[in-house]
Image 1 (tube, rainbow, N blue to C red):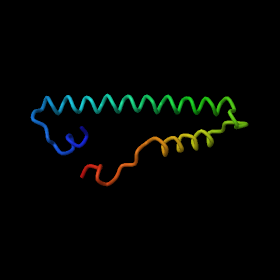
Image 2: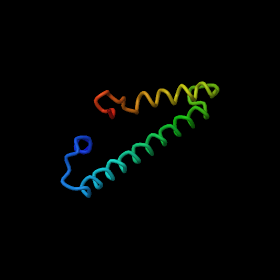
Image 3: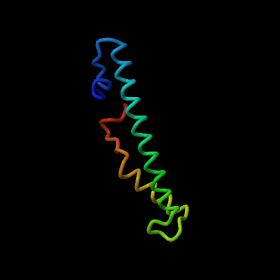
Length: 81
């Protein structure tokens, strides 16, 4: 579906709108899953799961690890010109 949107191969504006709405729903779902994972990991830090204290630096490091693990890297092919 993403390839069809980027290539512009749709027979109508309505078909494009339906495809774009589907991608939007998928993105929102993935974003919500990521938020939940971040919340759970930060709660684990706050409750001392293997860590004595939870400093702002530790929380920032955890967020960076989550971003690196979960967020896809955009290739130059995926970026808009």
